Image 1 (cartoon, rainbow, N blue to C red):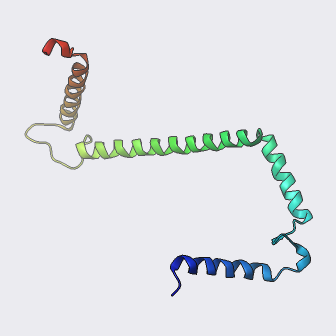
Image 2: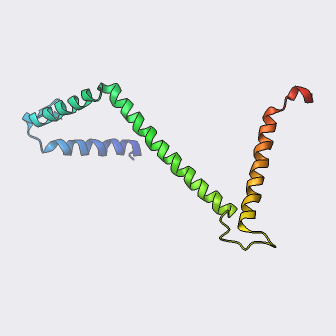
Image 3: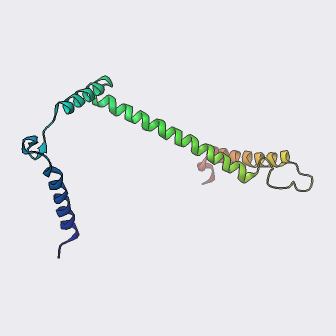
Length: 135
């Protein structure tokens, strides 16, 4: 019985051998295909491009900048989505409910705003308190 790891290795060896079977012996160097002039030209163009971007560190910096831009865009879209969800949940436009006895849509927005102000002031007060006074 062959273990799964051995089976994977045997399949990989068979696939590798099948890939190199079609190459003529002169095109192999150490078991790998020999580079052609086109490959060397492509490598030279690639190296020139890397050098124009500031070498390896310049390319790494560009990659990090692009990742930061994508991350910032995702955060922006997430915040926008969260804002939309909060607005819908709190029904600040007043589109999904009927006003209660004499309450207008603007009154509901004022109520929600006042609640937010109270929560904000409570958090600020918690940071201003000196724990030494209460021990």
